[in-house]
Amino acid sequence: MNQWHKAIIGVALAMLVAGCQVGPDSDPVREFRGTEGVKAEFGNEAPPQTVYDDQSFFVTLDLHNQGATSVNDSTGPIIAQLNTQNLFYLQQEGGRTEDMRQEVTLDGKSDVRPNGEETSVSFGTFNVSPREQVGEFQETTELLQARICYPYKTLESDTLCIENSIRDSRTSDPLCRAGTKRYSGNGAPVAITKIENLLVPVGQVEEVINREELVFDDGRITGTRTVEEEVDQLVQEPVLKLTIRNKGGGRPITGDNVCDPDVDGEENTVRVNAELGNTELDCTPELVRLDDGRGTTKCRSSEGLSVNTNYESIFTGELTYTYVESITKDINIRQRPGFNE
Image 1 (cartoon, helix red, strand yellow):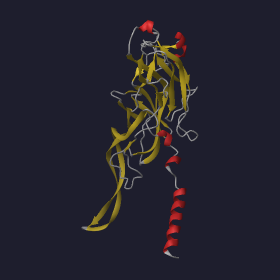
Image 2 (spheres, helix red, strand yellow; image 1 turned 30 degrees about the vertical axis):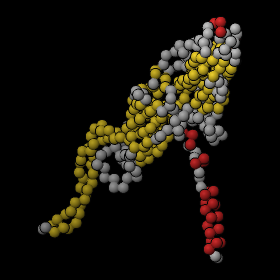
Image 3 (cartoon, rainbow, N blue to C red; image 1 turned 135 degrees about the vertical axis):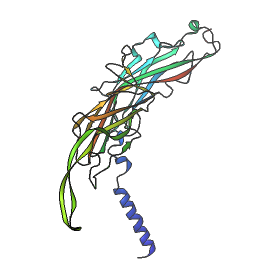
Image 4 (cartoon, rainbow, N blue to C red; image 1 turned 180 degrees about the horizontal axis):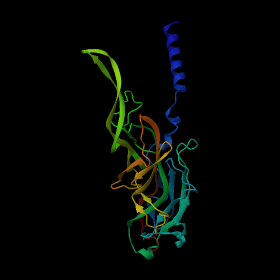
């Protein structure tokens, strides 16, 4: 076989192996990565950047659920609302205000929709107030503001090592070692960014251990014998410390019906639920306040996790909240000289 044939076969084998490997698009948990939720943008040229006093235009909002949570009828809808209270020059055609609030549902990322679902909502037709109402002007600006509010959750699941709860254990070859896990995002605007696996002292126990000692006779070693010895051991409780950060452009709120402008909720808070294997954990605090976008909580088993050896278990942490975000756009308003004179 000459060198040319060998090269061709080598390239073919490399392509075959590459085709059989699992690529990034086949990652089964890809939807639980990133820090996006529902993204909102004003539509392309709806509204335009510049409008004139003889021009009508539409206002639309493009919504794209880029996170892992579906917002549907069971969770409650996405509420998109246009704020027109402070608009002086712009008005909805016919003076209607009933279309300023729209409700939609959008699926999150999945195998069926790797990029999540998207849609557009319309807030009707707008125009500039007549010149006789606003007087003479050449150019001015109005600030258009939209608000979206939607229920969402953050989910992180990972394998953690739970260490022996008695310090100075004689385990010579542990199955695993506890450590700190870090995450850049979990497929939601609020992220669990770090899980610290701690061992917190909770008391002491007396443990009987067997040890071998040498037997001497006239200064000579004649054998060994097993003796029992009582020792005091420090008992430590496994505690998981979660660091939580708001990585989105809005703010999380907890409470019922907080998308209603007349309802007050707990601003900048999320509710935490966690499990280790089949054991539900108590997290303190359960309602975590994110001061400057960051907060922590500690989760432990109410029954304790006394173990004799290190072992691995699946940890699942869930944050629930309602997320609120606003976007704005400056609209330049110009009058045509002599129009309506």
